[in-house]
Image (cartoon, rainbow, N blue to C red; front, side, top):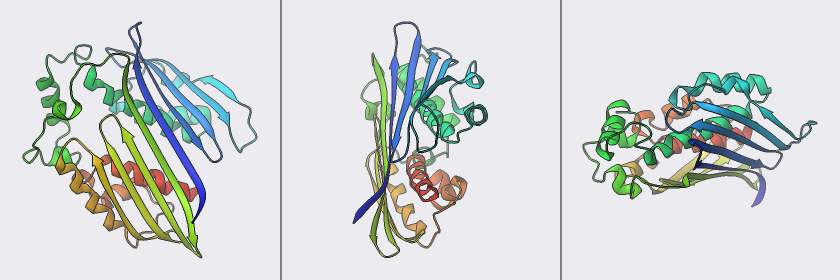
Length: 269
């Protein structure tokens, strides 16, 4: 087995003393190195500063740090998709969408520890708000009648100071033998741990499996079974929407879907 390509992501969200959250995603792959950073209001999640740093690239560009003005004044939340595309156009770099999106995801996850700042009266109110808003959105929220553990029983508590959320992701491509490859993906963050692997013949999936080693509830782990649906699928060039359909959509796990999509992008490189 010979390693061919690897990508690594690290997302961190920290509470500052000045009423802001500092969130960033650092990215390193075999060819590139970049950082997306956001400073957001701790109460409103409005973006006050957005920086893009490019340290290394296989393309003939110099290292640079830019203020991403299209993001300023927008909310770093679920409504960010359109403005993130504007940032990619501004930077002339599609990777910016992925890195700033990961940073926004980290901010959303950190809300668990910002109940007072975000206007929630209690842990119960926060959980009810998510149940009402995101019912059917993933395995957990599609099977609330089977869930045996509350969100905060999984997380531990609703108070954190300093560091609020971290996430590590890695995807790797290996050459096995003629036309045979192995794609692996790993995710570990403050709330989840996911591992997947796919054996390929050229770009066609011969076998796929995985496991959720850590998740909010046992019901989440059932979503790993959808990985077998990838057998026979041509992975190169596939859209994330198509992958979501294959991997169960609201019956599956958004983290598994994201991780498979991250792995598939390697084939486009």
